[in-house]
Length: 218
Image 1 (spheres, rainbow, N blue to C red):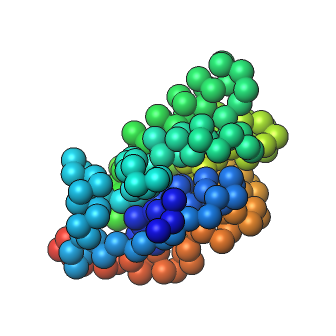
Image 2 (cartoon, rainbow, N blue to C red):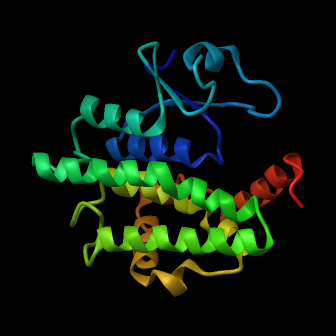
């Protein structure tokens, strides 16, 4: 049995975060795909009894849940290369943006494909406002932490894997509203550790179409 096992769903941006972090650290792991629609595995249910959700990382048999917590654990357990800044202030700032992204970004995007008409227009406006706030946090830097790809970049870039779907359902383009943020996305996607994990946007779009159908959303 592998020392590191990931309970995974290919379309989950939260699982992508963990996979990118493991790739950045050069950690070999066993990937176990979960069928979230056809019955969750006993290992998932016993490893994450509170939420019964992926991702779950098992390290030496001990389960860890919640993607941001898992990425933090990976960074502390395998120290090189570091994903967080060395200074306390830099780490605190990174954790602020991680918290902001976790609380706002994916749910705001979800509101776009779950609604239509006036409600959808409001959802698109709210989503763009969040992106503008993130763009402000990025500033003129190459990455959120400065010159190096790091913790906040991992947390955010995974969610951008769903942006194509958000744009198509909401009839807008991220690049038209936040060009610096869009340039950051392209920069991150040039990294091998990111490019090998982020799925084909068309496949994600089809996955969201399936979710809409399953939830009775026309």
